[in-house]
Structures are given as C-alpha cells and as structure tokens.
Length: 388
Image 1 (cartoon, one colour):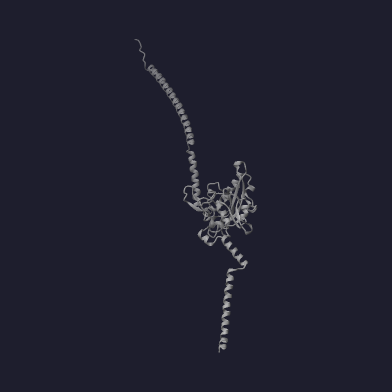
Image 2 (cartoon, one colour):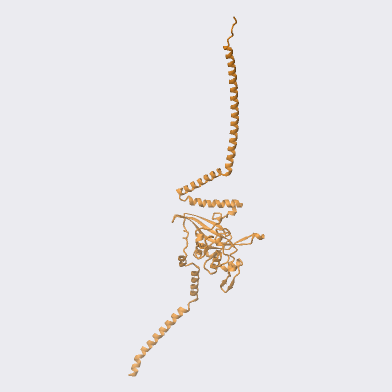
C-alpha cells in the first residue's frame, strides 16, 4: 500500500518542481532584461536623451512664448543683413555688463554658456558670409575656443571656462539677418530676425593698430528664442525697474543697425559696388526708403497717409513762415522801411519847398497886378480943370 501511495504522489512532486524551476527562470530572465541591455540599444537611448536635452522642449516654449515663425510661403519677402554696433545707445543693452554680476550678463556671455551646456547649436561662419544652418556645418564649442584662443580647462569630456576668460568684452558687434515680409495669411507686414552672429573685434586704433573683426559663428534665432526669453535686459536708463527679455528686444526691433548686404542674384555686398562712404550711406538710405514705401503703399492711398503728408506740408509752410519772421528778416524789413520813409520825407520836403516858392511867386505877381491896376485906375478917373 505504501508503495502504491508513493507512486501516486511522485508525479505531483515532479510537477511542482518543474513549475518552481520555470518561475525562477522567468524571474531571472526578466531581471537580466532590465539590468543588462545590449550596448547598441543603450547607446541609442543615450543619443536620444542628448538630443532631447539640446532641443528646447514644448514646456520651454509654453514657459517662454516666442513670436510666430515665418511661413515658408509668403507673397513678398526681402532678406537684409545688418551690422549691429554695440557702441550705439540703442544697442548698448546687449553689451553691458561685460562680466556677469548680480545674476546679470550680456548677450554673448549668455549664448556662450548655453553653447557650452549644449542647449543651443552653433553653425560655422563661411567665407562668403552667408549662413549655412545645416547639421553638416555645425561647430562645437571646443573647436571655437581653440580657434579664437579662449582659455578653458578640460577634464575628460567636460569643459570649464571661467567668466573672466569669456571674451564678451571683445564682442563689440553682431551680424544680424532680418527678413522683411508680407504675410498674406494674416494680412500683416512683419520684420523677423532669422540669424545672429557675434563678431570679435581685436586691436584698437588708439595704439595705432587697425581693428580686426572675426565673425565667430551663426545661431538660428528660432532655436535660441526660448532661451533668450530667460535673459532679462534693462529697458530704460531712467527707470531701472523696467526690464525686458532679449527675445522681446529683437521681436520689437529695438536694435539699430546699418545694412551691409541684401540677398541678390549676384550675391554682392554693398561695399562691392559702393566706391566711398557717401555712396554707401546713400545706398543704405535708398534700401530703407524702399522698405518704408512698400509698407506705406501696401494698402493704397488711405486717409491716414494723406493726413500725414498734409501735416508734413503744413509743417514745412510754418517753418518757412518762421524764417520770414526771424530777427534777420525783421531787421531787413526795418532797414528797407527806414530807407523808404527817409526818401518819402525828403520828397515831401522838396515838394513843400517847391509849393512855398510857387505860392510866393503867385503872391508877388498878384501884388504887382494890383499895384498896376490901382495906378491905372487913378489915372483914368482924374479930371483936369480948365482955367477961365
């Protein structure tokens, strides 16, 4: 009986052992899958994570909203390149402070730090000066520091740069690409910054050296716009509490820059066909005037434009009237009137003298006539008596 009972329980124990072994093996496989991944998959995940860190996320766009991107298909567009001189008052807000202090920094220091952290992408500046914003033309921060002799400390893959070694004081200019376009979808005329390029200026005319410019790299504005929303700039010299973001500064076109190039078929810059400085300024004014005229006459001759022209004409007339009533003009008038009065007085004197003389002559003549008549009358009425 015992043998029969043992034979009956033997298959059950063997089944339990097999089930236990199966569960243990399944747990081991799951642990191995979670802990030890293939190197190729691990590398792929790391590259995805790096891309996600470099590209601004949707939350960044929501946290720091930017202007609407320029449509690909527009009815009219003109691309203009400007040089932004940071010594001008309108652009000085991008230059100061040259070294970070109290959490404030200038534009180049901010861009350079974002580039070191991998938050933005930099594109190499080519010889022709045109921006090439493709992945093939991307340049790394370490390569830029080696090229422009910027001191840094490297430890493995990490690079560290002190604030004093960032050449923000030497970046005294920016090249800026601006697209002026008419958006038929919103029926609006817009100015859009599309690319920025910091320019190193080394050497000084004070010591007899010619200043040399070194355009460093291009950045795509749409890629850095969410980051520029974090950089706060002083908006006024009189109200230090008035702050504005760097993105608002460029979106509202607060900068002042001279045109040095426009996109054209021959890819010429203004200095190629402008022989001197006066011709350059004349060409710059002509291009600016074209843009203003296109925007003013986009909707035809409206009442506002006519009122503006009428006001300008009235202003010109008032200026002409003021010139007439100026002290010099009054002096001239007084001189001419004085001359006229003196002449008239002399004429009156001469005329009065002549009239007095004529009256005297007439009186003398009358007295003579009376005397003669009296004499004749006396002689006519006298009667001679005869003697008897």
